Image (cartoon, rainbow, N blue to C red):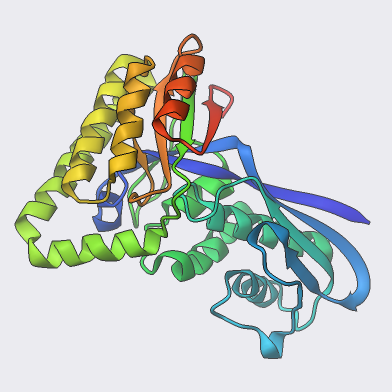
Length: 313
């Protein structure tokens, strides 16, 4: 028997980096960009493959599990959760999400994989417990993760997030159209987070001020989303990008893509995720998404995705 589990990509609308230090952030799932796991029940020891990552298939064994491999770590945590010492079957991971691009590819893959393990066992895995498992795996990807990626990916709803507090789900009364531009440059979030941490040590006052200013923008952005004010939300996104530039996590290409999106008619645009590479997001209307995409292609975007975050989220 074959079953398929999945989890979406995510985009941080505002608040990245500052969220690691207690400031709020807003993030949303990108439902049409997903990681998938095909689970097949067999009588053989568990075999895992991940064609999108280029790794060789492997057999999972609890006693030989590599805790530094995210796939093996996710399976190990699931085995512990379900109190089993051995697993049988096949898990094939595949993904549409660019790797190391700030779109939560690691969290989505871990969530889909954990759901696949539950499917093999015929067991339930509540979202709250799945979220805790994926967060533990995220530590391998990011070092000191805020928890925002796993939360958006697991619950698949837009969220207002503050580290260490209960998550608020945001009601979007006017759908958001996001145009996502991939720079084609890998950007491991862990590296950018570490650099910002070093900057905080070197210039604590200046860096903390930037965090607080980002947090203030997030509060205004939540109000703009909940009232359907896309013009205001776009302006806040641009201001957030400027503050991320001041944190030295943007790049010449990301800045060029932001400018291109604005030429195309975007309400606003900014880098999304760790920065330095990865992706840029632009807030579009139905009428401007095509012109924005064309400007982004001309400016050097390698891949472009359009995703809607709507009232049904």
